[in-house]
Image 1 (cartoon, rainbow, N blue to C red):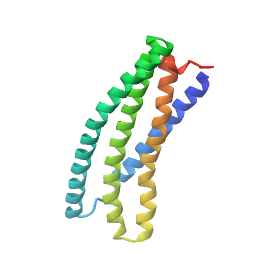
Image 2 (image 1 turned 90 degrees about the horizontal axis):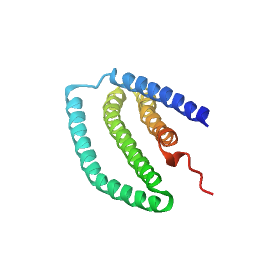
Image 3 (image 1 turned 90 degrees about the vertical axis):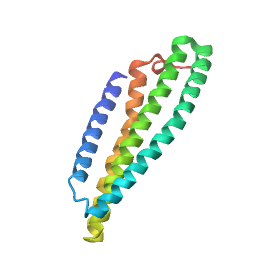
Image 4 (image 1 turned 120 degrees about the vertical axis):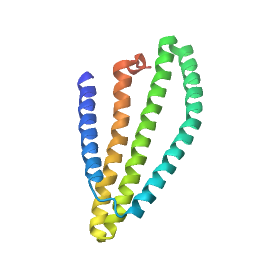
Length: 163
C-alpha cells in the first residue's frame, strides 16, 4: 500500500514540476502592448476579488460541513475517526482553493498571451493555448492525488476499511 502511495507522491512531484515548467514558459512569452497588459491587470484584480468573495462564502459552508461530518463519523467510529474525517474534508477544501487560485491566475496570464499570439496567426495562438492550459489541468489532477496521499498517510480514516 505504501508503494502505491509513494508512486502517487512521485507522480505529484513530476506533475507539479511539469506545471511549473509550463507556467514559466507562459510567463516568458510576450504579454502584448501596454493596453493588453492593462486589461489583463484589470481582469486579474477582478478574478482575485471573485475568488476572495467565493472563498469567504465557501469557508462558512466548509466549516459547517466539517463539523457535521466530524460529529456523524464520531458517533459511528469514535472521536479520532470523526476528527480525522473532518480534517480530511477541510484539507481537501484547502487544496481545491489553492488549485483554483493558481489556475485562475495562470488562466489570466495565459489568456493575454494567447490573445497576443493570435495577432501573429491562428496556429501560434492555438498551439500555445493548449500548452498554457495544460499547467492548470496538471495541478487539478495532482491535487486530488495529494489529498488522497495525505488522507492515507496522516489520518486514521485513511486506513479504516468498513465492512
